[in-house]
View (cartoon, rainbow, N blue to C red):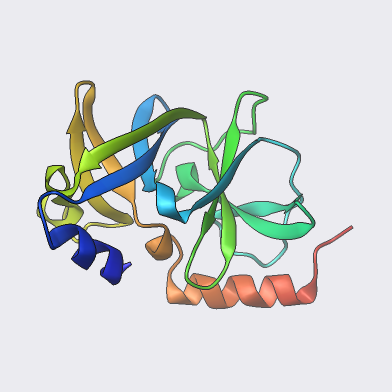
Amino acid sequence: MDAVRAAEAATAETMVDLLLFTLDGRPYAVRLGQVERVVSIAAFTPLPGAPSVVAGVINIGGRFLPVLDVRARLGSAARPPRLEDGLVVVRLASRSVALWIDRVEGTIHLPADRLVPADSVVPAGGWFDAVTALPGGPVFIHDADRFLSMDEEAVLDQALARGVPS
């Protein structure tokens, strides 16, 4: 991810592609280069022993992927999946995961200089890489590689190694 940020900062002419989505009525984004695919919500299986932000696992294209509950990570109220929800499959440094979202809004193509480092807006930046402003207000851009802590990654690895319940 640092290479991506360095390349963006190299010139004001650099453009950034983002996938916009909503969660509880608020807009968020992930870098389009990390997105593998977007799929409709489907039933996922709980994964015993997984970190609390892992809602379960789902088989997408023959791969069992952890479903990460973005709502739980952000401290929003838990709720069951709805038919209109979606999953954004993103590629992290160590694995692919499915981010459970409300809905995809589309993609945008912005000059890199329109992005502000998240830690200059929010203390420590949290799980966000950057922030940009759109006509509807600010959009926080998730740094998908920071979604899970190192400890959560280790716990998830252990839960996945025990196997997916049938």
